[in-house]
Length: 430
Length: 161
Image (cartoon, rainbow over all chains, first blue to last red):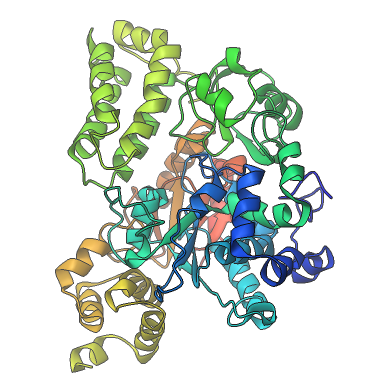
């Protein structure tokens, strides 16, 4: 037993777990047990009971999602499992860490998940800039193939699986699961209209499950140690651990696997070593660029799906970015809107036209051309641009989350820029 | 296979693309892999390359170009021998990537999107590289460089010929 399912085989320094080290620590024992002793339905039930929720940000129960795949023996077409490793949410660096340090854990997780939904094809959709994770995962896949853990008749059963990596051409929107599927099919990564949802009609029109890297990495340990063990790891309503990260001006930026529901304060003060001397915490993007800012009053909240949502934000990817008091809230808002405007796929008008408009108006405020009423104008338009249902996907909705929350918590800064016509932070570090 | 493809694409490129197609339900699905294979060999995707790939995949050049121009990492213009991508997303912004960018532009005497006169370096902006605990970060070809200090740039770049 371990209390760190994701990092159990890594040394304290986060050292690389190669095939020998993985096997020595009972690597692939869970997959062997699942494929030779358990039915796909029992694995789905086990993961549902564990209350494992999607670690890519949405938090959907993994076992429930797997249950949406039609199990029709008469259907002879492909079923796909796709691992989403298009880690492009700004501020997020957890999936890279998992693959660079323990790639076989992901291969084993994919194998068990694919078996559970009876997929015969699996893909890892990896961003094109992840050269080192690509090399390490490719080696792990080749090693697993040579041992008969992938390919035909795995562990002597009649179950077969082909696992390949698709390196992305590079666009943030590929992280949206239906856009990802279009990219996998070699098309422009425009999100698809839903329904149908991917479990019914996904890659090449076939049943498809898309799961995040961290989600799949939890699966082998759940099979080995059981759902109750996993439930008990969490400190609140949620199950398991979470790979939490901190970036920004803290003493020790990094990642730590902790019980899900650890407080933001403990993550920042104990694990990230607190703020650097001379800098104070002003804002937190709790789970990536598309999550609402939180502030110091939220430090004692547990980092879990429900608590962060109740505070008006989202846990997202669980890797938080700290904005300290040397950073201009207007400047950071321009940076965020520039990112979302640039990465809009361009399909829906409110997103394609609205996000660059927001960036321009914020730039006007920053450069001394702000007018009274600009803040209200931004709020009005952000509400329209980000309203779910006005666009195919949630890209624009995510884009306005950090903006409306910045206006809520740092409104004085925006007002000062408009009133004085200049940025008071400009003489500082930036 | 038509002669035009044979003239433009190398045997290695064609066989690598055909290998990708063999794992996919149809030829067009290999569009991104095909662009990546040719770009890896030639640095960028010229109109000539694009037309040849489109013909090999059985699709129109316009369709393939709509895909090629959609993705950040497919170059439809020539690039230098080394491509420098500087992260400009939020964690790197907080940690001062603007200073890195300014110092790089001063040192190389080019703006983002341009290539040095000697054809050595191309400078491009890039979104979050997923190494935010080491911000500010940049990618030189396939090398990830973290905790970049503007005053260390000259020595970092001296390692590239």
